[in-house]
Image (tube, rainbow, N blue to C red; front, top):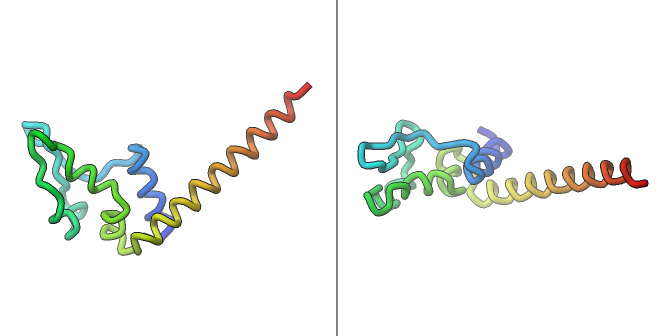
Length: 104
């Protein structure tokens, strides 16, 4: 996975439009499964009844995405910010054009 794809994955997971691979148990605790589980996950609190989403929350971080994709964590965050700024500029230019078209 290249840096842009890693940053897009990070943004999608942060926005909850993409979800990490995992399963819920009978008590509602979520755990990462398969290749989703990385070395960085070992430092995270084990899911419990009090904190059922501790691993899921971790799997949405830049640190986890960096381990998952082999990219640098800081580079992922920087690329994600660049993608967000580009999207914001695109949105602003679209809004400006629409506003001009309907300005009487």
